[in-house]
Image (cartoon, rainbow, N blue to C red; front, side):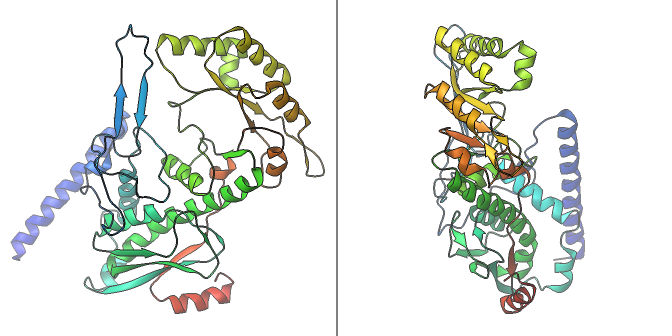
Length: 404
């Protein structure tokens, strides 16, 4: 190619990058959810040998006339809303649903923040573009692996020709020192994708590992996370909870009515808050789950009295901070058990507050339906995973440092 042609190509690309930056800046200033996936590369494709894709509508909204008594029903998908291209049906564990979350955009954003405006200068300096290698995933501690499906998306976004193979699935146990997957292809592109892949997998695996431990201990109650997730990673964090054997609480502010303490205080009391919610849902022809937070046995009784006298959309009662910590590190669940007995199966119940790996088993024996804990996602310890071309040397170093 002539030098003049190369120069023109780079000028066009620089102009495109500048336009993309201006669009992102404008969207940010206007408070618009900008789908970066539309600004960069086209839709990714996961390797055809393992994942089949189907075109599915990302958002189906059924809206009756304003005077209709039919309830509004919103069907959601985790795929991109304005450019639906993918289906997660073939994943071992599918991500939760969200009407606007752009998973491809998150991947592109993670890669873009790593590449900056120059790309990987170290790779360009040290690795021939045509060099092909195999790199192996190595677990450096025991845990539940999560993020395998997401890792494949990232590799294929960077280079669709990369071949990825796994001997484990999302949700499987891995032990320290295990090689559980490999990627083959251009060394340059593998190294470019490496850190982004590991950042997602390590976080997701840490969430899944803690979730598995707490879900097992909580039985027969079900373990839930909360909205205390990393900004921008709501769906990813909640996906990891599912992989770890937990269940998802509400995805956001839109898919469940959750009357919490501030709502109750502003409304003038728990009964007034419930009345307002029932009226709002009726007036807007909406049907969705409704949960109310209670902090005392008196509030539980108020809720039960209201529901016995009035038709209500209430589905769940949260029993907040009814687990009382004791000086010896144990917990007193007598108040929680009394509240569960008061409800007596009329509604789902959810215990919240003072939930740890040490206390969750005892809480699970109280009779509650669910136990929620923000710690599953807000203070997660990442699982130590690496991706190495020279695994023999990596294992030697790992053994020396006690990490393999």
